[in-house]
Image (cartoon, rainbow, N blue to C red; front, side, top):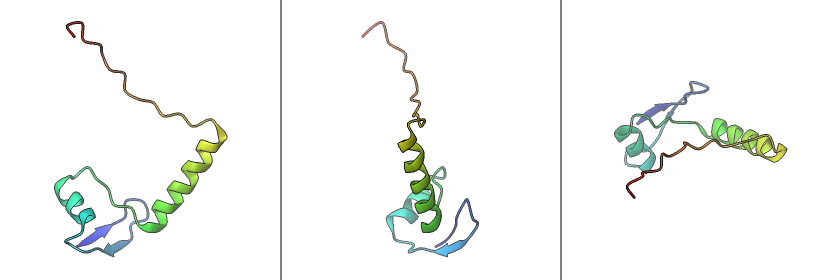
Length: 67
């Protein structure tokens, strides 16, 4: 299966029977990142997280008054 990295537009060939290929076929919202981009984003995210200015915002859930 040919896949294209969403950041650097490199085309790679992955095994069609792999779990990652199945996820890309069945769930269109999943994006493919090549190994270089995945490592670069992971490294920069860890650096931002170490600064203390990195915040994860979670969706506020409404409380149900019936429960």
